[in-house]
Image (cartoon, rainbow, N blue to C red; front, top):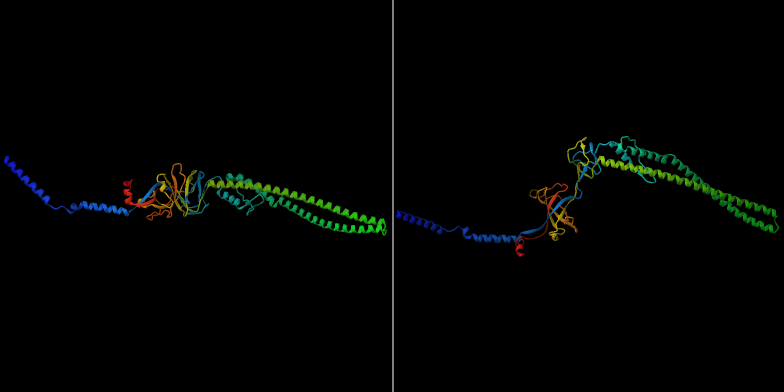
Length: 426
């Protein structure tokens, strides 16, 4: 039994020795023989490659897209039924164009007729000019009806100034002043002739005095010449009295004219006050009930709308998109690393609504850096987007108000090798 076990042990040791000898005698694969060398060469090549690869230093921050002329919302200012819609969805509209109106107590057509008449005229303290002289007769003005009646009364009183009693009285006063001026000119000419005649008579009287002293004529004849000279003087004094009376009459007429002009101005001022008040009330009604486009562009319905639909106060109904607008980004940067930030640096904007893996990122440039931090201790940075909303992959993004993005400001570039060994250099 022991001899049998010994034979098995000798046989097993003989087999192991043959396997071990086979392994030891076999030549290894070249990968195993030169693996360390290859690994070392690969590491050296990768390190050499990092010397030629640039690495961008970036600062991260949050940003929000904005437009120089952003789309504007049109909101219902009054609660009620949407009486009319004038413009279809996605139609082009002009600034100030009426898009529709909410139903109210006043008639839209009557209010607009009144408003056009009010805007057609020009009223100042001295005159009121309207292309259409007749105030339109309107009865569907609702809450504006009482103000319209005041305007109608004031305009009727204004008509008396144009074609009624005031105009006739003004014409009569002007004629009286013209007549007084003619009479005064005539009297002045007559007084000048009388003064010339009196001067001649005075010379003649002095000559007769010398003749009377020389006893050539009798004293009685000299007295007769003296009486003629006094009569001429009396005529001149009477004429001057008439001139004074004419001047007093002219001043009285001018005073009446001034009073008339004052009364006309008061009437005009009263009408102007009513006109401005009614115009302001009409504009307020239009602002509350009429839906108006705030700018030129394309009208987009925010929700399906139809006439006679109930709308609430403050409900957003439309948005008007401008035909073209420049865009920029408002970037908020923390104080960490702010010293490396400078104008002209490149910025990459990755929008949250448009994943950068699918759409790419927007490219921009730093234009302005705020000098004063905000209440969150961050600095505002203005970033221009020269390429608009076209990403680096050529895809155009659609603008929406309040689009958020993650911003990366490229503050500099260095070799990747230096970036890797930077921790070791510290």
